[in-house]
Length: 169
Image (cartoon, rainbow, N blue to C red; front, side, top):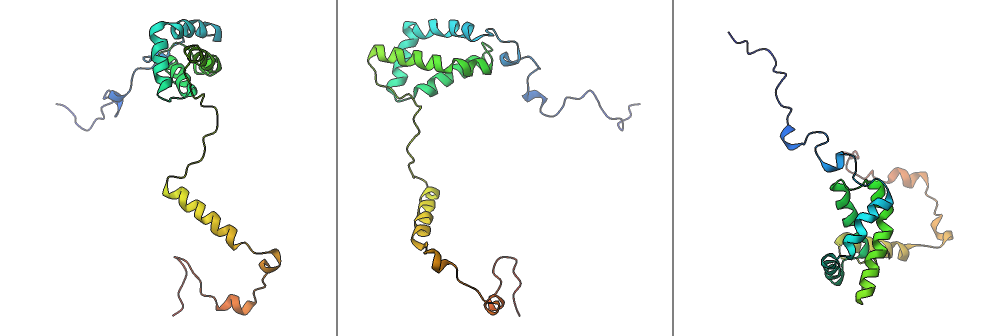
């Protein structure tokens, strides 16, 4: 006879089908290239290959910044297990310079992506903030007028305001 009151300990954990075994992903294993030099030896021949450089130039002509392109390349290298995150961060400037060199050689104008973007207020929140800042500037008074004394009677006659304030009945 089977006792249904006993707990089942060999059942799968909820969500187990959505995860992979530890070490089953490439970035969970030791990297293929452990130094900056080794990682650059992997990337530079690939960047200078005709097929890849043509694709690079097409992407740069579309207006994608060099920083975004180099970051995408190094991040995919991390995800493929080619190198670690810290090596990827260290090779970023070299990848950016290599991509810009390829674009310069082809005579293509490109955006490095290192300049701070100009603030464009397209959202309603940005517009509301600018309106509030303008109102504050307009309502600023000289220091003499700002120090207005409030008497105790005036403080007592003011009704409490707010959501949780008690009302006088």
